[in-house]
Length: 256
Image 1 (cartoon, rainbow, N blue to C red):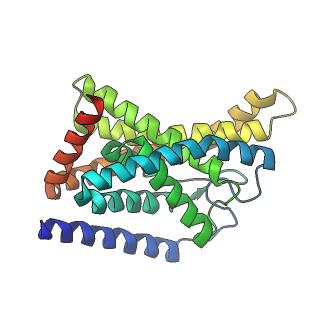
Image 2: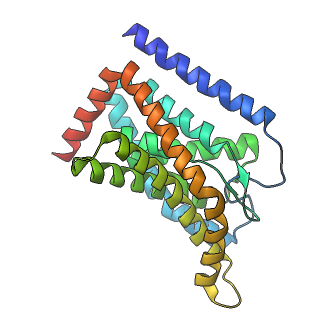
């Protein structure tokens, strides 16, 4: 047990070291990650906060239940959060006021469910906004809805759908991570379109413009994230088999 815990801790430290290296050596741009601070009109910013908060509260309850019943899974929760932090710290400027990047939410969604990931993902967004000036506090609700709520819900649903149909687990992991990534940017495109409808064509025309620009960079990023998530999943199966079995039993109890 101690050796497995040390391996999980070392992997968490490795992930943290990797993200610090990437942040220090990453070329700096004027673009902020996600939807930047002050970019959304205040009415829309408040609206997305109102949509996000119920999921965050339910997510806190979910994590409390997991930690209370299975305290040995705390480190694995940390790994899921660190994985999301690393991937979402890699940004490619895409459109004014936002950027394209992996999300890393598929792994945590498959491991702990979408509600738990709503907390982990929003904490990632909070610390990036506070410490790295990526995103913002007023736009945190909007960014969390796209990356920490809708993306994880899609990832979990796709994973359960494929595995329930007796599809391969690796295929399910790949599809869950990739589609969570793409869905995040579909929602982001919708959020921007609602806030800034086009003079000609309104929200639909604006959505087509934002989604089209995002798709250029996001589709290959989603595929890459899916492949990377499968590799990390294979590693977890090799070194943390006992914890993964406990997670499967926990999910089975929740569905009964």
